[in-house]
Image 1 (cartoon, rainbow, N blue to C red):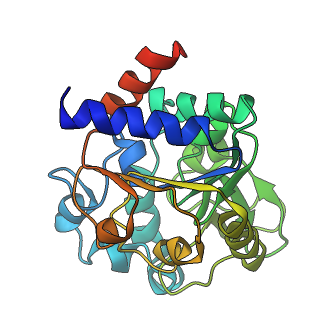
Image 2 (cartoon, rainbow, N blue to C red):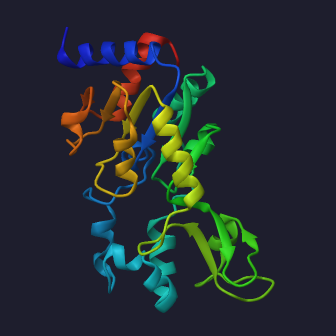
Length: 251
């Protein structure tokens, strides 16, 4: 039996013996859906090279306020993948939830794919592209309205600029979401971390709240938390899910 197969068996046993699993997901879980991450060959660090600012600057509160046209040009072209759909990894987490084992998904992603896959208790740490709010009167808008707008989307009621309900650089997180996320991790008997480098704080800091002995990290590259984990799989998430599904007959 290979080392990978041994790890899959260990992961399977951990899941079988857990009843309060919390998943923390990052960009890596959505890459198989065609959404690039920041640091890959076609990631946002690369796609921002044709602009006057870096990706972080373009997605900052300052840019939204002072260069709204450039913000929206970059945002619409690089942050929205409306045709992307959930993949096997999203579906697997949904099935764990249906089985009563997974209690929450905390995601750093703004793509809404966990919700699209059917997961019910999703804590979107950085917001969602599907929610948009007028900065003047507070009227809510869907993604289609933003995409249909030429240039800067404006409110049909008061004419003010519409802002995506995503957390931009320089902005604070939603306190209620942070509190719920911490509570979920603190009460978890298994923390399943998928597709994140654990370099972006404060989201990465959620791992520090876990006190159990089933910390599992699934990520292609090593992370700074690998030595603290009970199980590490530096593998493609779909490869892992396919093996789990093969044994559990979930697909």
